[in-house]
Length: 335
Image 1 (cartoon, rainbow, N blue to C red):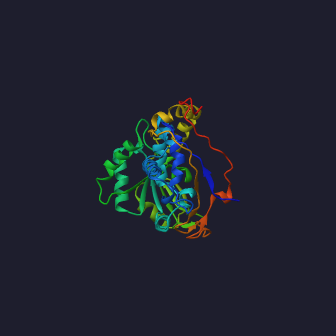
Image 2 (image 1 turned 120 degrees about the horizontal axis):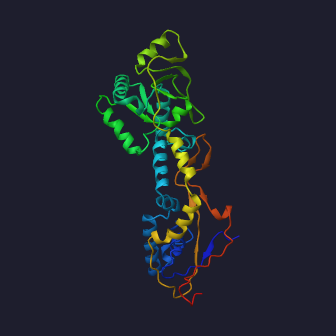
Image 3 (image 1 turned 180 degrees about the vertical axis):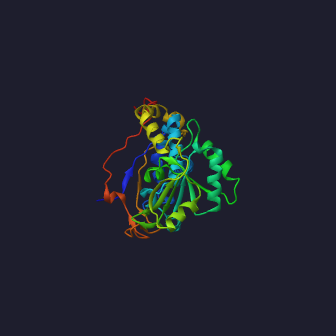
C-alpha cells in the first residue's frame, strides 16, 4: 500500500478552508521538498505558514468569548487550577516541577483556614501569626459575592503586605472540602506529606477551631492530644461561597447548545480571512506525513511511548480513504 496520499487542491478567493489544507505542505517529511514546488507555490506556502503560526482557530475560545458567564467560569477555574494538585496536572509535570510539588507536599503541614467573615482585625491577627510562623499557610475558599477573584485577592494582598515576611495565602476551595472545614478560624496540623500515585498523602494529626495562634495547637500535640480538639475560641460562619460550587452553578446555568449555535453562526465573521487566487491549472502534489520524535516521550510511570529518532507515519495507523472536494460556491463555474 502506498503510504503517501495525493492532495488535489484548488485555491479560490475568500475560501478559508484552503488555509488548513495548504498548511499540510509545511509538514517536514521526505515526501516533498522545496525543489518540487514552483516559486509561486513556495510564496503561497510561506504566506499560509506565516498566517497559521500567528493565528489559531480555537472554537472553544470563541464560544467562551461570546458569553460573560462562561468567561467568569474560565477565569475562576484558572485561579483554582493554580492551587489544586489534580492528577491530570501531575501527569504532565516536568522533572523540576515534580520535585517542587513533592517538596511542598512534604513541607506544607500547617493550615489556618480563614474567611472574610472574621473581619479585618481578626484577619490581620491571622496574617501576623502566619508571618511569624512560615510553616503556616492561610487558606480561603472563595471571594465575597459580587466581587471578582481579582478584587477579592487584591483585598487580601492589601492586608498581607503590611507584614514582613508576607504570609502565605492560598485560594483553595478543595482543601475546605477535603478537610470538611465549615467554621473559621480552623487550624489543622498534618503529617509530612508522602508523594504516592501522583497524589500527596497526609494524615491529620490534630485540628482545633477558634484559634489563630499555631503555638496553642502545637502545645496540645506535644501533650499527646490528637484528633479533633473541638472549638477553643470564638468562631464565625464562612461568608464567601466555595469557589468550586460557584463554578459548578455557572456551568450548569450556561446554555451550551445556544453558545455552540452562536459560535457556528459567527465563527467566520471573527476569523481573519485570506484572499486566495483561483487555480489556473490542475496540480498533483504528494506529501509524506511521517513525523519524527525529536526527544523521547516517557509517561510518569516510566513507560516509553516513543524513543528519540522514531519515525511514525499516521497513515500506518489510520489510512486516509476520503476525498476532499473544496469549491467556491460564489463562482457559478465551480458549482
